[in-house]
Length: 438
Image (cartoon, rainbow, N blue to C red; front, side, top):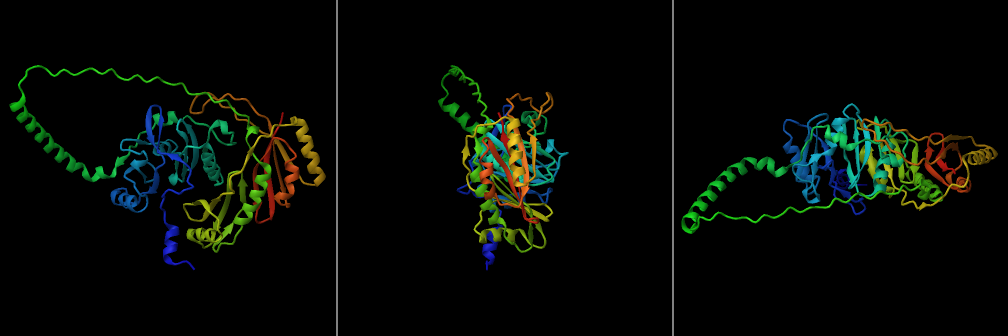
């Protein structure tokens, strides 16, 4: 049994840094303006008197928080930042600008590639999610966060870099958005209570300085020569052109098929546990982790956390629907090795070989050519010209476990498993992936 202190500790919303937390940044520069990102967001219950609530959160939840911003349009929220991490008074909040721009989209998930890294933001039912405003410094961390959120249904809009090639997403011009929205600036918590004192103290100080200067001039001012100041030429900084990265074909960095099969099989079994008050849905696994949907019967969020802790399963994220009727747990399968797997067959031969194998086994397989999105010029969507890599998308359902399919799937060069889905109701497995062709 857990005592009250342990339960309280599990429900704590503290965001203290974890040793395994991916590296992140506090600011990014877009269009010559510095924007604050990676803020900790909370709903504001009393917009007419926000400071007691903000101050309490800064002291009890986010250690070291000393700057804040209030969202005045849309849902009432406030974001907290830490000056020691790089946040500062006067910086604009990028999250508020984006939420305001997409006000007609109640829910959207996005990743923007910026010079400092990859900025990730998720807004659900008009609320900026508490810890989903993050500037990731590593691309894989940003992809992991994005794919985790993609497991949540009913996103009104999905934004991701064109180079990621994710179906159903668009690349959007972030500079255009931020230039066409009203800025919301961060303020220091100390400045809110100390402004009046600073004005009075500043006036007294100016008078005192003036009197001291007059006295100093009376006793020591013996020359009428004007003060000559040396002119220091400004520093000239040479602008360095960004290095153009060569695009890498997708088959040069594919998730290893055997590792995905074994790690997903093991991971799906580990999360297939009984939790009082919660019903499990279809479990989805890919190279980044496992997303498990839960439907609430009578349980609480703490019972979910407790069950995973007792099963020795580390939760990467717990996403709870605002109404509290459903939840999604995100867990890790460990780091999957990336491999080089050059396409060996043409599209026609690949399609023929897949059909022959599956017809011999007696399993229906769906095949389709992987479609590429055509971006039009103008508006917010960037025009991107890139080499097109042809591939065949496959999908099939089977009662046979993942390990049974290892020999079949590893026989194709250029193959990558997109997802393995365990249907807990029908007790079947759905396999999806792509095979790149010559």
